[in-house]
Every structure is written in C-alpha cells, then in structure tokens.
Length: 326
Image 1 (cartoon, one colour):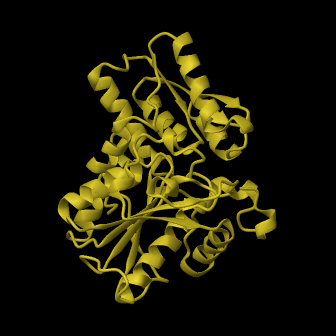
Image 2: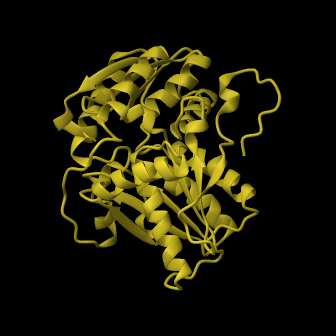
C-alpha cells in the first residue's frame, strides 16, 4: 500500500506500492479489489515497466549510459519511459499512432521526450517498424519493445504481484487483467500463481479484438474504442501465453463506457476505459464464483485500474456513448 511517510530522494522512489481498493459493486462474499495505478508519478501502470526496463537495460549494458530509448507506444508506456529516462540521464524517442490520446503525447514531450507520429491506419505495426528504423539511424539507441521484451512481464512479477500478495496475505482467488502487451497479465498472474497454484486467471479484451482466437474462440475482428488493451494481431504480443490463462473475456465498448461513468458517479473512481473493462470482467468472475459457477481457491478477485480518465477527457469519455471518440 502507499505508505510514503519519509522524504524521498527521487520521483522514481514513488513508482509502485499503489493502493489496493475494493470495488463496491462486487458481491459481499467475493470481494473485488483493484490496484489504483494512477498513483504512480506518471499516473499509470506503465511507470513500473519504464523504470524497471531502463534500469535493467542500463545494468546489462544493452542500453549504454547516455543512450536513447526508442519505443513504439500508445502513450502511457512512453510517459513511463520518459519519467525514468529523464532521471537516469537517458534520451527518449516515442513513435505513436496519430489517433491516440493527445494528452499523453503532450506529457511525453513535457518530460523531455521526442514524439513521432505514424498514420492511424498503420496501427501499432507501423509504429513498431518506424521505431526500429529510427533506432538504426541513431547512435547508442535501443528499442525496448514492450510487446516482446520479457522485462515487461518481469517488472510485474517483481513488483505488482508481490504487492497484491502481501496486501491480501496470499488469499487471492482470481486475477483479472486486460491484454495489450500482456505484460501486466502474465507477470502478475505468474507471481500470484507461484503462491496459489490454482489461481484463476482471466484475460480481458474489447469486442473486436482477437486475443480469444488463441484459445479457439470464433471471433469477428472489428474496431473498438477501448484504449490500451486488445489487438488485431495476437502475434505482435510475444508475451501472451494462452495456455496460462483460464479464460479470455470480451467486453462491449458500450458496457465499458457505462462502467466508466458508473465508477466515477458511484465509487469516486476516475478511471479510463481499460480499467472499466477490467472492472466488468472482475465483477463477472466474482459473481460467478459467488453463484458457485467457478471454484476459486480464495473468495477474492483482484484486477488493475491502469490509469486515470483525465488523460481522455478530450475524447468525451463522460459524454454520451456516441460522443466518445475512443
């Protein structure tokens, strides 16, 4: 839990140790808890991998001192890397598809990073390709590549998982998280399953995403407004192991939008769309467990609220569904 009661030397010392807060809509006998990752200094869960990956790459020599991190990112990862890079004397360049949050791109620039946009229609694949091209053009540059770098999941194995386990005295029955890079899901659940061997693991994606095809689901590809999770090509996420998860749940954008508004109005939680999707999936797991449809090792479900809705206000998250740009 967040218990910083002494002066700290650097903003990097505030990464992690985020609060674990009960989701009030859960059934009484199977509570749901969410890690509030907006309490990180860059206001998202990606601060964890930004700090961990830069430190590990510097220590191993893969990233030379004074070198450059070049990363394709939808935004929050860039902010996390930029916070770490600025404090560890590393340069940062981020390649971001045009349609993603303007607020995030402004924050990356404010933290001293360079931001290069790629066409929306090229998706993250286009951003990844451009990032590798840039790294070849620069001296002492490295692409951490959050979609394939094991350090992404390792960061959560070393931090997020242990924090959850300690806060709940090891009594975690299920872990539920959205799948973008899959780093949060895989790293956290692997740590928790090392403690509770029959932990139930649920991956979350928006309808239109295709992670479920990796477990044989017959899915229709489509566009979706939910940011930060989902994929049109599961092969781009080398970290995701479908054999490790018990189920993959799809959440409709309309339901996610309504849950964002409910969490704010009823629970005081100003969270973004991936958190709302996680909330709905976690509540569903808890309700099924309470009804006896799922047998959990402990009557407790944990999820993550990855960032704040403040980064998406320009996209109309609190207006009507039709006004939400996604």
